[in-house]
Every structure is written in C-alpha cells, then in structure tokens.
Length: 238
Image (cartoon, rainbow, N blue to C red; front, side, top):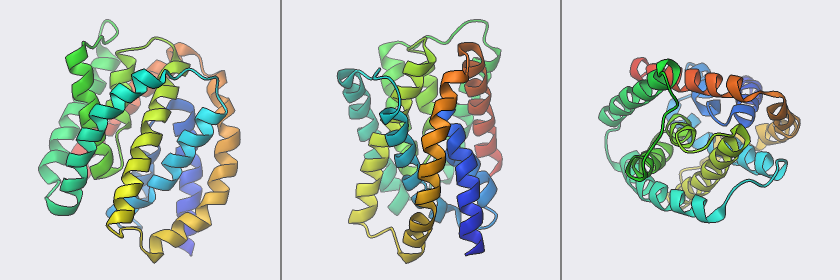
C-alpha cells in the first residue's frame, strides 16, 4: 500500500502538470516510479490518469476542437496504434525505443533552439500522427510527438492543449480496449487504479484552471523543453 500511496501522490503532481501544459504526466511519473514499480505495469496503469486528464480538461475548457480535424489525426494515429499494440505484445521494443528517443530529442532541440516556429506540411503532420499512435500504444507516451505536431500547426495555446487532450483521450480509450481484449489489467493494476482515482479526479478538477494563468510564450517554452528532456530521458533510461 505504501507504493500505491506514493504512486498516487506522484500522479497528482505529474498529471496536474499535464492538464496545464498538455503533456509529460506519464513521462515524469515513469521516471520517478520506475524505481519502485515495474515499468510495464506503470505503462498499463497510466491509461487511467490520462483518460481522466482528457475528460476533465476538455469538459472544463472552452470548446475549441474541430471534430473533423481530430478525426483525421485519429485515423492516422489509430493505424500507428495497431502497430504499437502488436509490438507491445509480440516484439522487442528496444530498437524502437531508442529511435523514438532520438527523434523526440531532435524535435525538442529544434523547438528550443530554432530561430522560427516549426511549420509542418501535410505529409510531416500525418507521419507524426502515426508515430504518436505507435508510441502511445507501446509506451503509454505520445505527448512529445503529438505536441510537436500541434505546435507546428496551431498558434493559440488553448487550441494546442485541447487538441492534445482530445487526441490522448481517444488513444487511451483505444489502448484500454486492447488491454481488456488481452486481459492485461490484472488485480494489482486494478487496485492501483481504484485507490488513486478519487484523489486524481479531485486534483485534476482544480488544476485545470491553472492553464488559464499561463501566457502563450511561457506555454511554448515549457512544452519545448519538456519535449527535449523527454527525448533525452528515453535515450538514457532503457
């Protein structure tokens, strides 16, 4: 129970950060709790807080998501998620993990150091949608890829964050369906979810309002640095 209590406390902090900035909750949670709980167990568990973040964040924010645009993103992300679920159950993920870490690091470095804002064409946007889906299904993490794609598409922070939350919510529902079909959520993970859920709901409900206090420039700088740090951490934590 001590490990579950610590997990709950860590998730309250990391996913409150995610509901404000749109990413990094799972990355930070796994970095901290990976020393206490098996990483694959944490990846499966992360479905719960990510669904809560998406549901609460979208329910308590102005409606900025165009469902047709989101559907196009999800189409390509779902194709990637099928690949990710296949790799999750049947193949070694080490090579993909390192390649993904390199890609995220490069994106992050460009966003932090680049002289102008990243602009993506249709082909680059679709490729990142697919990569985000694959990474979400395989590692429970797609924030750095999806946010790179959205930063290269939109200007306003609320629109960027809300599309990210809508994408993550959809991908995690898909991931949850895959887990249920494969009986992946065992008793240990079920207890972790049941104990932590009430505390996460309460924390995320109030943390969502902090997004309104963050200005556009700070939002982009924080997200860029999180993408860079997330990529580097993937290279050195496997």
